[in-house]
Image (cartoon, rainbow, N blue to C red; front, top):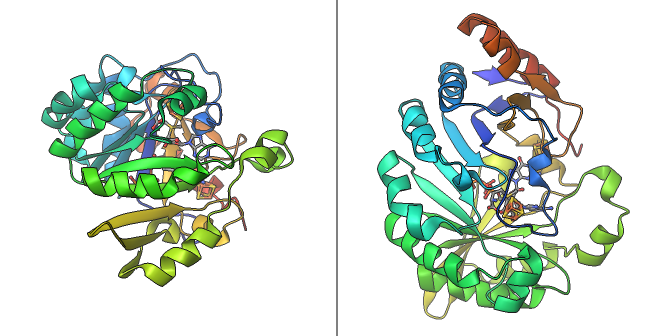
Length: 306
Ligand SMILES: Nc1nc2c(ncn2[C@@H]2O[C@H](COP(=O)(O)OP(=O)(O)OP(=O)(O)O)[C@@H](O)[C@H]2O)c(=O)[nH]1
Ligand SMILES: C[S@@+](CC[C@H](N)C(=O)[O-])C[C@H]1O[C@@H](n2cnc3c(N)ncnc32)[C@H](O)[C@@H]1O
Ligand code: SF4
Ligand code: SF4
């Protein structure tokens, strides 16, 4: 197993399949990706995942940009499936109505779907596209096929903070887990007008959840808390993602990232941490040499907030 200088094991790989997206959410961090032009082929992704699995990384998250706009997404899933014990996808849900069955057949275990609002006008304002109905249809289809389905709500002050309880009820109704997510930005953006205008701290709400939850669980990864809340005669699972200035979150970070243009990346919020793996691969590196590339990336890992 790969363990970094801070004693953190690396057990999962978050792969951006493309930096492109069919939506344009105004708050999007695009997973910290730069503008590289290269793009990994399914075979190259498979080889990297196979080597990662040898090193004890058996959980893979596919993300983006929007991962489902890659026309070879099914091939990628089929190719990496044998090496992975938890294969998940994070998507904006716009393509799920047509793709969910095929994703399942290809071997995907579960999906997270972004949904910040149930209000059509707000949805358009946030994403620039009037496709809420299409996403809701996709969510309903996905909940019939995958377990669990998580809905990702980035909570934004003055935009959707008043919808949190409606979203909790909605998640209960469709049988999904709701993730409430604080806006996150790198240090250099903390003073930005964007952050000042829209950051909505979730700590007070977590305190409310603590009082009313019938059960609270803590995940190993990030030590995120999951609250089981009694709402409308149902128990709804709500996970809170509070990463800003959260030293515990970073000390329990078990993720390594792979950018769409083939760099290992150690932290969502850093820009100085890219280690090229696709380049050496294309120049004929052996598996052993690529293992060394992984090790070099792991050496660079450090908690962002410490
Ligand atoms: N700071 C930080 N934020 C993260 C990290 N991983 C995920 N996030 C944020 O968490 C939110 C949810 O991300 P998802 O792609 O749904 O993945 P996840 O919830 O972390 O993963 P699973 O719970 O395993 O499905 C997004 O807002 C991400 O930006 C991380 O390692 N660091
Ligand atoms: C970057 S998107 C990529 C996958 C896919 N396009 C989607 O929207 O689900 C992954 C997740 O990060 C979240 N996200 C994007 N920008 C964020 C930010 N600044 N702070 C917190 N979460 C953010 C999105 O809401 C989404 O749930
Ligand atoms: S759909 Fe995802 S990648 Fe696209 S802009 Fe929104 S959050 Fe970013
Ligand atoms: S170190 Fe912290 S900010 Fe960086 S990826 Fe891990 S949890 Fe996120």
